[in-house]
Image (tube, rainbow, N blue to C red):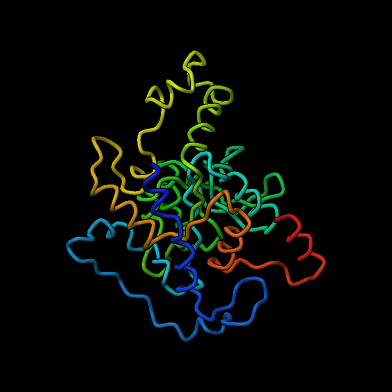
Amino acid sequence: RAAVAGGARGVGQYNLDAYSGNNNNNNGEEGEGEDDYESLPPPVEKIYDEDHQYLVPLRHFADVKDPHRPTDTAFFFHVPRSGGSTLKDMVGKCLKLVQSSEVGVRDGHGADPILQVIEINESKYVNVDTTTVQGIQRAVDLGLATSNYADLVVSSYLHQSASLFDLHHQARAFLLLRNPIERATSMYYHRVHELGDLDPEISIEDFAQGNGIENNWMTRFLTDRMEGELTKADLEQAKDILKQKFMVGFIDDIEESIYRFMKYNRWKYAEDENQKMKEEDCV
């Protein structure tokens, strides 16, 4: 876990510069605007050599260096206990963007026959659940990506979510990482005191030594190797997927991370100055 997180340190720093060049960010700085979309060449299918076939299932996740397209959808790879709930609140309540997560199927909306946007607790959601494998398949069947309803798709299932997207409707992935020891500690207390699925008689020391702790969560979910022993090759693949496909932020530098996510996804504050100040204060 530490190796994957450590290998990601700095990825977002140079990749953002490579992506943006002289481009505009979302806070009004001078540079590229929406008119430049017209000059983009049409997207083409990525071809990977024999050593990088593990990237084929993720080919419709844009590379970090790829130009932003108006049909792209932001994809937040939610690492548990790593600031994901805070980021989702910011996106929904501060920036007023539409999300697809587990919230949209509340109050029976998981049985809706068509896609729609609903409002729950001052935030807007598409009526699908992209945090479960079954929910992702329902979102695929209803055409979530092609609908352009969602500004942000949230899921921990990277490979399963790939089926949501296609060449002309690609995902732009980003994630927040946390110090692995701090994340494991948070997970321990969350499971003992909130979920209640971990015997409180298990000490945090026993948990850290393998009694209930996750088994290389990051590497497994990035590579889709959920069972069996992991190898050094799996670790290297996970690190390369982070490098190629993800804008990486860190919870211990959350303000800079949010700035980078907004720039990467071209999320904008409101044009009205008063509303803009409220959104900036909220963020």
